Length: 305
Image (cartoon, rainbow, N blue to C red; front, top):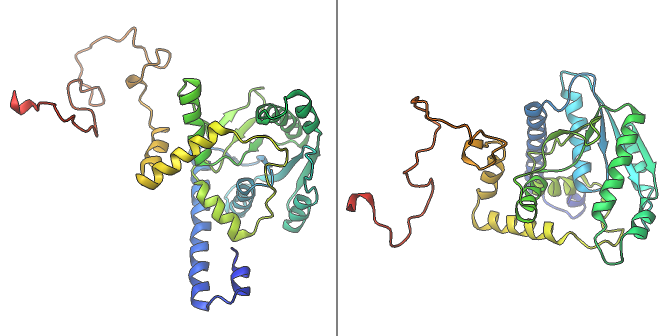
């Protein structure tokens, strides 16, 4: 709920000040986390033209808002253009985003492409359309980036999206693969960045409420929700509720990878591994207890031997 809404409800001045303080802390935290991600991965450089993909959802609104703030503070110059792909879904409120962006005074482009009809023609009724829809959308956005002269494409995926993708790939794809904060596109021509990589979804939800973004629902196409991703999302939320800090540790592990202690022969030269007689403080201590392990009930300690 925005501060204006609270004022209309007659909330006390002291309460309003407390809420304003918390809202300001949230904004500062988002700016800090987005700025850190940009710096850590060198996402935006002097002279860049960044295409911010705006869907009308909470995450892309937050991304655009924070990037505009950081642009004013940055020691470098970069341009921003907001781009929305109107896929001609039934009941899509085509006036909302142009009105919002006009009021904001930001450069923008609305791309009109009827991908909805293509998807409905090719995907059987009742099946999830998200995969084909995403592929069509990606190709169009690459073309638009070229036409607008944008050398960076910014997407609104946050920390939770990255973690969900990691577990989806592990559970259903048999791969240790996530969603990187920065990558070269599959056509080799575009740099895709995810400045919200360090941001929690709960923070974008609250920020959307505070800012009063005109949210456009993502279920206009009537497609079934990705049930596998929903299961992963629920699992992570349950873990965070029962074991605070667990999800944060998992996310940290994505940037602290030890290839020698996994089993990918392409990432580490296990076949050619030889002893060299040189002590390695980072090497495996083969007979020690596993870190953080809980001894089984019937194990015998070394002191009993």
